[in-house]
Figure (cartoon, rainbow, N blue to C red):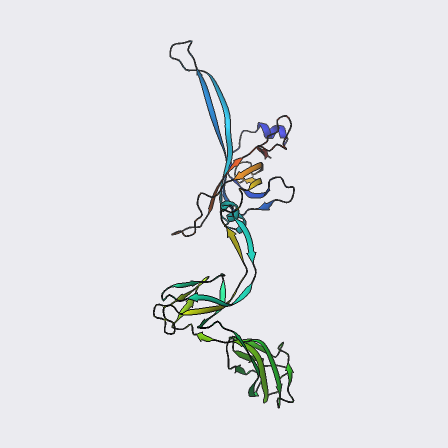
Length: 334
């Protein structure tokens, strides 16, 4: 179909689906998808001045002067990604990589939560009293070990494990972990059933490090949440005001510090497809949008999905020049 026929086409019922992508205004790099966009609407506002007709009975309007006062967009985003939330809350973003904490100090309040410095915490240990240190155990003896055995060490949360095996300590040689054994449950050595370096009936001498201090058992005392440790009101080994030290591992995560960044200006690309009528594509280039903050960010809802409602103002793009060239947006239809 020629462009002339497209321009003259009358039949055009429309129900668009499509993808929205963005890049920072003023850059020339790639556009990046912003995810599933439930609504993308262009808005216009105008002012009107009218001149009354004083030349006839009944009055009426003699002339009208209309001017567009502003244009904007409204979006509803389904994907609560780091980038989308950061733009919607004017947040700065930084990442925290996987790590471990060995002695995070807290004061116990029975029935209360100890908020940890990190989130996504695992392998949590609670120590009471003095801060835990590190002790070293050398050549802890375990006799008559067979393939497939589970050896329990004298201490918990062991690290830097080295195993030697042989008939006597003097004749023992270091046993490679790969294919022979693994450390499980923080205080046990699981010998592989087909360990090539293990001879049944010989002994293990195990050297390792472990934390010192009074370890509080979880059972009857506390439970672990995503970013906190909840101390039971009736904890059996803790009392009000106890000083405790937390040790734990944590995964990587992103941090968004809301309302610390300047508003973002974006260039948007909408690649739409008409599901009805012509079944043809429709592409909209929005040259410069000053995105506002989200009117709300739903953290909890009784039912349904959370979305990000976004508004923005179309700002004149001075780089768009020429007769009949819009400085605000362009629509192309096939």
